[in-house]
Image (cartoon, rainbow, N blue to C red):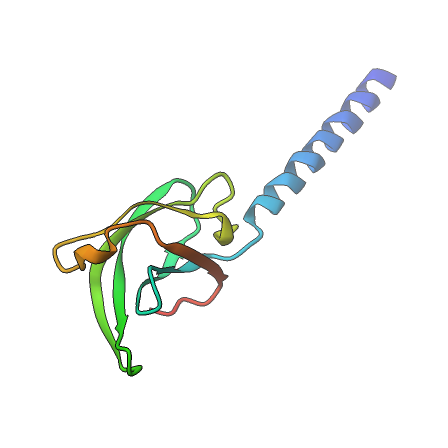
Length: 125
C-alpha cells in the first residue's frame, strides 16, 4: 500500500514537472518580424514569420531610401533564410543563414547584414 501511494505521488510530480515544461515551451510570440539592414539606405523586411523550429526561407521586401529621404519599396524582391535556433520564440536569437538573393534583389546586398527580429502576436497580413 505504501509503495502504491509513493508510486502515485512520484508519477504525479513527474507529470506536473513535464507539463510545466511543456507550457513554458509555448510561451512567446506566434510570429517574428525581421529587418536586415545593410547600410543607411538599404534594408529588407520580412513579416509574420512563424516561430516554429528549424530554418525557413521566405520572401522579403527590399527598401531603398534615397539621400533626400524618399523611400522605395519593392515587395517580395528578395529571399532570405533564417535559422530560428533552439528557442524559436526568442526572435532576437534568430540568425541569417542564406541570402538575401533572388532575381529582383540587388546584388549589392548579397551579404550578411545587421539583423533585428522582434516578436508579434498580431498577424499583419
